[in-house]
Image (cartoon, rainbow, N blue to C red):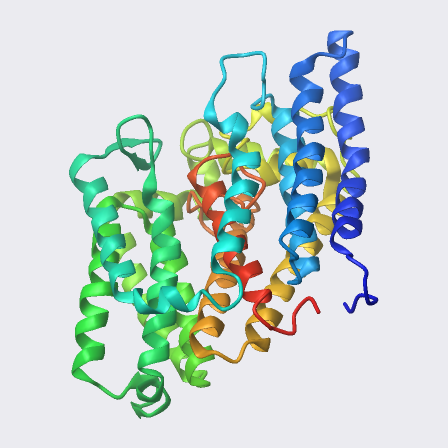
Length: 427
């Protein structure tokens, strides 16, 4: 998109993204008004607050003279706004109840995104290249701390105060992989066998300490979802860095074999696969969430019951893992197609950005970050629709605010910083 000289299209694109959400805002507010008989602040304040947040964001971007990918940004504004609509509908953003930090997660996320954008724009993502090995070691420390001091809750592991820092591991290991494929690019381009890189001592040591060790810790922590996500990113980045599709084929064979062994020896994984294959085998227990989600989506049909007219709270953990199913009941298959289309636009712009960059590290970082968000979306939607086993992975920008939401905004900030460093995307 090429702007006229002297124009600044960011506010217009952001305004269109918000305007597209206004019908959803209105439907939720009207439905709540019909039930309560009053315009309660707990319903309209979060929605109004989001509009103000985006307005402030537009002013801030104009102030810092942002010239990166505007379409990528507008798609994120729409998705995050739809997430606010969904959470208001589900009652999780109730400002009249005891205030929780999740109430501020979206504004905090946009503020964090802006800070990351300003700090790393103009090619300053190269600072991360210097510390790509320390980034991986920091990921090991985070996982080790969770293993040593964490407590298990709803399948996850949390530190004191329900803090779960595991999401930062995504960014740290993407930084590591971008640096690894930059330093050892020639080794990956000269395979000894199809899909097997030329063995260099530094590469072997690096992968053993900085990749295999975090994967082993994830196995001990029983976070198979994150392990699947990160190894999918590894395969995609290996193909992009080497130009050899054999890495993908060989990697999928290795991952498939390792996954089968883990599922066989880990009850947690085997139970999820069993519920994926036949949730009716335990309809009131482990299969309850899947069946309720499928029932809600089937009830919505093509056009949905209308925002505020369904019963999405009947789905367990609807605000987080199953927010897609909760939306599907009320916006129907047609609405879901439109939401998925916005996600696809977001991913297209991200991969287009990666392709436009000429610096190997910047290209690897962009491709890794957008792959994380794309695979995360695939795993969540696939699990909810029963196309894939459940992984416990949240839906980027839509699921209930927390560390996952904030890390999504950090990744968005890095992508926008890369797009503002002379790339063609968004120009």
